[in-house]
Image (tube, rainbow, N blue to C red; front, side, top):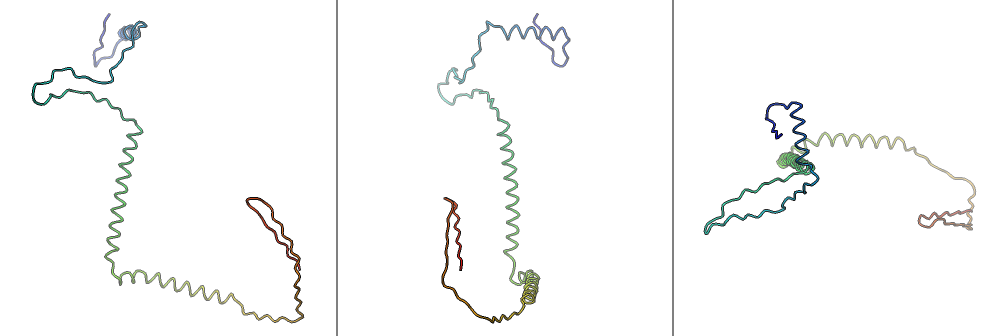
Length: 167
């Protein structure tokens, strides 16, 4: 029974069973040899005696992996984003290039005033914290010139040296 389904209408159970049986019998026979597909195309049509050769249709069945397509889309997005950032920076720098000295001074004047006030307050606090002390030492002064020095080093790469100096 040779059955070909009609497009647009669903198959009945008997038709589906017959089609499945036909596919299994024709496609999965154990004696059927494996079909080999050519890896190149050779056109054996005759070449004209003069002039250009007529074009020959060649199928293009390239498959682009999902990762490559994703990288391509991402690179387009990154390029567009960087272009937007570059245009914004260009506009800002063009605006800064046309600034005059008076306008710069007027913009920075409040910041300079705040900095001056902060340094004045810091200086006042620093002077208030430092008390005037006058140390007067009374008594005998003993000066010993002998030193007992003991030194020990431990470790190879990260060495630690300890010096004990006792009077």
